[in-house]
Length: 319
Image (tube, rainbow, N blue to C red; front, side):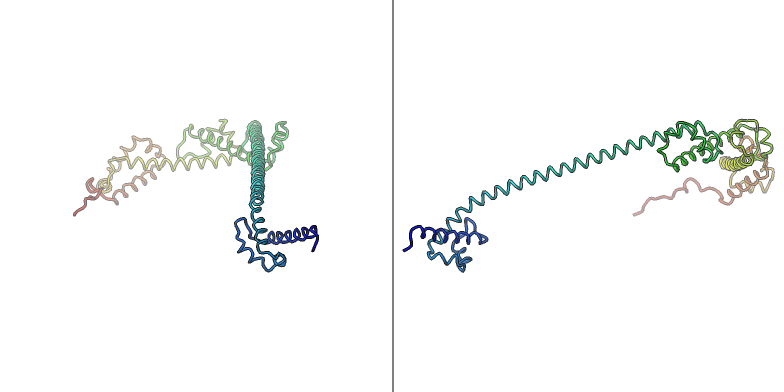
């Protein structure tokens, strides 16, 4: 017979191997049935080494009973670990959001600062142009040299060369439009007919500052005068056509009346001559009469206007 010590050691090792077998077997829980578990392990030598089925079941029950405490402890550790991980992830996400927000805020602040500096530079450059460039015929090349001599030009170094040139062109365009408006005002104030020539006009206005300021080129002045006269003539003819449409004595019957008696046309003109829209075309009376005759022909072609009751058809339905 083996000594007690050896027997205890043998059973300790036997139980240790059996418990290790149970631990290695997946799916064993506190509520697992022994009858189902033993089917999974009954071919293992460590199962067969325990010669008592009762002992196997007892050891299994002891093992399963201890699983709850172990599982509960592991679950709590896992939950605590997951909680910490969530906290850390939330803190990290918040940190990233703060960094992103701060970065965006700094970029916006820098952008606003740069825009403010640019706006100031544009304002200074426009002031330079207003002070130094008063002739609409100067070139950018000559103006650029002039601007560099002013100490304020250093404050506009942040502007690109192309942008400065664009501001210059805008300034020149504004000067030209203002000078053109003043030149047209001068022409409006001068006694002039629709057939006046540039030579005639020039004698009357050449001493006026508005004449001199418009351009140093007489060719440009004459060209603008020609444009002005064309617009004036076109507007005068359009105004006269409006007058004809307003004149009630001219109707679809007028053409027949004129054909029967040419003096009727003179009578119509006597009515029209009370209006300045007629008188302004005195210098081109033949063309004015052509416009009048064209209007009479158009009315004759249209015929009598429809009676008021026939102008809108009835929409009454019938059942």
